[in-house]
Image 1 (cartoon, rainbow, N blue to C red):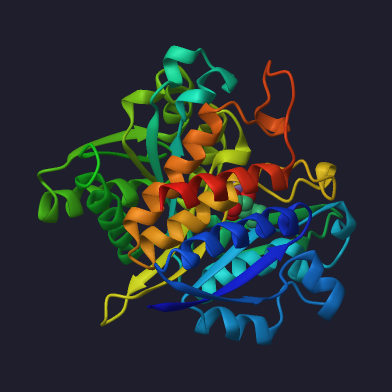
Image 2: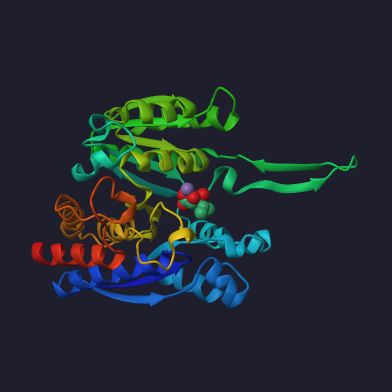
Length: 368
Ligand code: IPM
Ligand code: MN
């Protein structure tokens, strides 16, 4: 039986609570004899700052580099609002993405039938929704230099962030999007703001070239990022795969998440380039944050975290069937009426984080 080494980084806030539920689901998969998982635990974000004065230690970075996959829950919280900028909780997450070379962030937005009414949009607009947002994750304004605040002679300050993309960065993320589209509904919407940004002009040009050269069979459309935001809430089912830069991808995936009922539902996969053996560095994390307001109460929704483990099975371990069964277990549990507080809607009651995790683990056990 194949054995995989997974680095678990629960992080802050609700992170440890939702991570515990993943371990239950992983145990079901290994008990069924599909694979063995060796979990190691590390610290990232505020918890790492408290322990080492850094957002992630060198030892945990080395573990992340060596792992078959990293599972990260969430970082940040008001407790660390005033720590120095370069050791703030988010810096740990950004360093993992950058140092592991995880340029492709896959953020599926799937509306489970049982949750269509929990969406803030009309049910018919979101029922059956299945979008894949492909967010560039190691470039753009998140990492561009200079990035600084300087003092001006007149006593004012000047802040600069730099949005920068090179051809190869757009080429490789576009290829990921086109390849995914071929396995889905064969359509890619590429989004930028070429009407005001040079990086948008280049982005559009490169995506057009990659399409013409290697993926002419896939339908390609370009849409300005503001218009795409509007279309996402107007008629979301027109989209299949959306490919966009780091910042627009961050914004648009939060918007897309609410279409599905709750931010607590969305998993994500961050992938690096394939090596000579076809193996990619990978980190799996929910789209949601650390939700400090509900941390420690046992009411957080573990579905995005469990779904992220499902994506690890799909994209890192080749356990496609088991990944499908995890998605199905989630759908079944929701269809049976189980709800955490965030997706409760008009339901009479909601269940705890661990009750939701147990239910999904049990449903999966039956299916396996
Ligand atoms: C996300 C988060 C991060 C981001 C933060 C925590 C740095 O919002 O993964 O979407 O902006 O990328
Ligand atoms: Mn975000």
